[in-house]
Length: 319
Ligand SMILES: Nc1nc2c(ncn2[C@@H]2O[C@H](COP(=O)(O)OP(=O)(O)OP(=O)(O)O)[C@@H](O)[C@H]2O)c(=O)[nH]1
Ligand SMILES: [Mg+2]
Image (cartoon, rainbow, N blue to C red; front, side, top):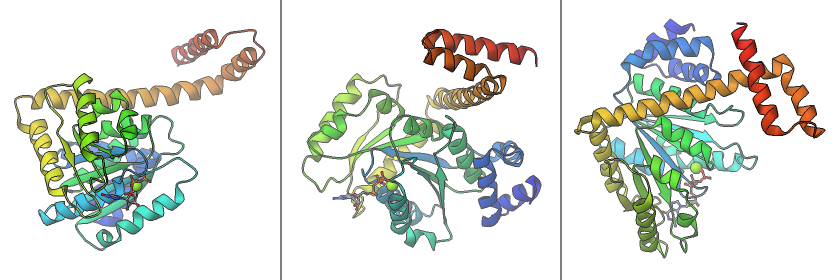
């Protein structure tokens, strides 16, 4: 299928066209770019929601519960599970699929996993593209689960209009180890596994972290949930809806949308710069030379980096 077949297929609601287009977007192929360019003006309908948090926090269980709640509300749901780059991930992915099995038989749900491995700083780019294709395909809600820690989470948050941070009770270790930066990319906080002891303490600690975070006009609510039984999930979906309304309709909507667009453009620019600069550096042979010099301690790494960039600039200037 060429790009226009894919575009027409997606707009006609064909799953096969959607699947193939997403593969093209993941591969960053010319067809993928053409599809994205053509579909972008048709995006903006879906609530794109990122679900992030540390390993085992209950993200997949929560995604399943949110999807079921959205279906009850008559909304269609696209789900993107970002596979971890960890070598221990295979069991977890299988687990994710099994937990979502009842959803895969539902015509109003589309499930897709996406690899984060080997992504040269371009996870924002891919996740944003995949979410955009699902948005254009007409899904009302697109849920993106990030597995993994640190930068992946921030990258995926760039793709989402609303990011939900999933924390757990547990003596506070979990919450206290959270980075302030993560607090700043999340608009809804949820303490999952509220059936375990310490949920209220975790809420209090999150409140403390929020108090010192650099926040805009939106004040992130902190909720409790038990994903396994779906307790607290309707309230979580209500909170997501409230943030989406803020993002789309409040007096701050214009500014929020601009901030989000800026984050997306900058994240993707960073990814492209990174990729292209490294490709140029490698091709020019400058990288290998400089690495040898640093390894031999005849040049320091900072100086080598500057020299490498200089070599890249020369190549680019030469066109
Ligand atoms: N007690 C309790 N356990 C839960 C709850 N939600 C999820 N779990 C359990 O926590 C474990 C991890 O759940 P997942 O949904 O796989 O967590 P995850 O965050 O997706 O995990 P990774 O994708 O591997 O990072 C599973 O054994 C779940 O059954 C909950 O509300 N209460
Ligand atoms: Mg998971």
